Image 1 (tube, one colour):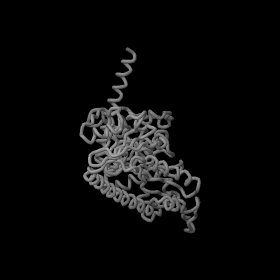
Image 2 (cartoon, helix red, strand yellow):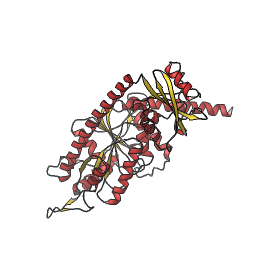
Image 3 (tube, helix red, strand yellow):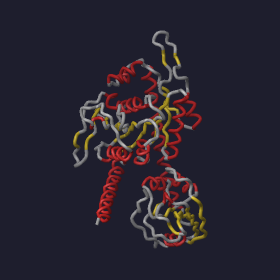
Image 4 (tube, one colour):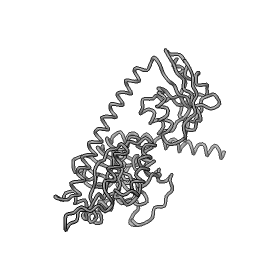
Length: 415
């Protein structure tokens, strides 16, 4: 009875998780551009860049959401001087984000902490992951042009959860010019490439200080490190932001007034960064639309010859896509199996197997179960994914697929 109760409990959890997955997918469909602002290390001004970017985009008339997923050190509400609280939404169980301006709404953990804003948040990974998912699924966002997401420094649970939950998010990486910051930025770049997150570009903060007395620019943290790193890594350099006393004063006072200050070197530089961000987002959207069109074309042309991939164990389909040590690649011609080749799977790292599958020229994956992120990555590349297949030899499954007799079912949990 105990085991039966446990099974029912787990089934209920899975149902709730799937329901939340559907709500997240539905909500994200109403957000055009998602930007994850991240950095390799703390103290580079990442949260300030995220806050100024959201406010600047809203000032241009875009509908913007700002989501603070730095759950241990939320600074967005203080940078904005935000005093409001989260209110019940019009739909049952949903909540409204805190309004900052007519077309900018904000969500952070701080408004949920009551009067004690200095209380430490001591949470482990699973709880943090759940909160971030709720910030997307359970918040009643309006249709947005941009969702700006402020992540804590590093490559931990929070940016990984965003990458897995928001598969089309694009990373904006903030650094300072000195080498110790750039070394950590390279880790952030590698993180994005490992989880298949597109990188919007690099912003170099604290890029020189103009002396208010003599007008000379002093390179306090060396010069042009962010620009050189972007060039070396084949990334966009979105711009450099100078140090300006007004930025510090605005941050402490919870104001964004420097964006309206004529003659401010920071304002002029930041508006150029915003131009670059908008342009890069539009370029990537057009490229994504072109890729989708190419995928549809590929689907319509692939009927004569297919490559079908099947995760294997003991000569038959393995029910766990991500845990498989081998994959069978079944080549078909004119609706018949031509040959079967078995290859060892690459090391089990996030995104590695879907990327490898694509490199093999695969058209269809047949599996028992597959994780949501892996499935999304494959389908984004135009690869058809069939789940819930029986544990049979790969050539048998391929023949069933070709004759439209393949029986599929529920996605076996792959976590």
